[in-house]
Length: 179
Length: 192
Length: 144
Image (tube, rainbow over all chains, first blue to last red; front, side, top):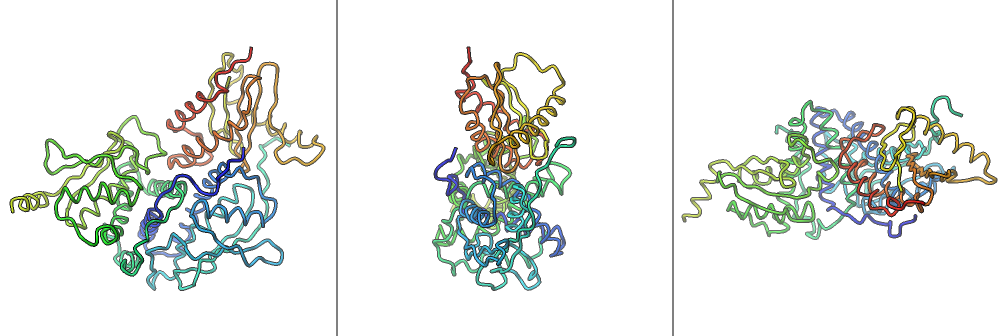
């Protein structure tokens, strides 16, 4: 059942709602963690991971995509997911020679509108939620990856760059006593 | 709400006048917002023992959103002209604020029959409650506390001090309870 | 005619079970039946792939007896939808795919009160699923 028009979600919300809700979430976590930035970064990545675990189901049901057999396929799917969910198209670049590592680069990161980091938060990885999300989503389809921010517009880089590195393929779970 | 000021200031919109006013028309998928919001609820749940506590946390996060939108919307949609009358202000909330945030107006605005300080904004199907079961007993979790927090902070920042809470009634009803001085001021303006 | 539906996650946890037309109740305890069901699926899956003359991507799709058919949909994330129907029911896998997108993804995946890996208790999901099943042409047709 391949549904046409899977490019974009039919139902939309204003980008600002997402941006502002996320801003309030980060603020709350900073507050709860007493400004311990390392802990906040971990929290944001973990929250992204949890979103990824769920978002993958949305993606799979929408695209009816099969499992990816190689990283280039995975990269295309991630790019498609950015289009569907965040309405932006990152460039896929900087492949490693072994084709197991690449970067997603984009300028219009919707999460960081209105955000300005004061000097004391310079270690805050505000967009780490996106990295966590990619990691969680891929884990559900049995790919373990590392995912991290390389460039960050909140730190005067000109774009956001996320690096995705393939670690290993995970085995399907088999119930005890089987096989 | 004793949040550290440093962050509040830093995350406020930069000078909104520096931004092009076409901003705000961008859209993202409904799914990604639903999942982010779901994590916000779960996060609050993990830090709360009771439903009212959880709702208070959502309310607080909503208030933070309210802080950020109030300047933005008045500048963008109203040429920086603020409302001075309660009813006009509530209409602004019901129409402009709701449309900007949720893409549609709230269904109804009513004044309480028994208490002149109390108004109701009624939203049949709040986005933030779309995926949780409507509970049998009405004391259980209503995620629209988040929206109530937004409304309360926008009203308060505009000088209409009040408390706003959300309730399972006709969908979701937001109860807006103004402080006495706000009502008195409104009356005096009427007399002029 | 739809008899029942099982939904398992990739670790074999039963996330949801419901039944509609199942006049003859199982002879074993429900919990036991669900475990056996999952074990059987894993065995069938592995064996049909071994027998396959060429590599398969999807593998096992359904089996049929003289009284009922078992339809199987596994998503790339390892969710397993199993639906038993009468033998005449058509396009059940497509139906399961839609159920996945329109009911599961909306009312389970986006529900903040559901924790992955646990049984679904949302009454909203239950009623949306029930509507979805009952509106399907598969639900009403009875093989004679």
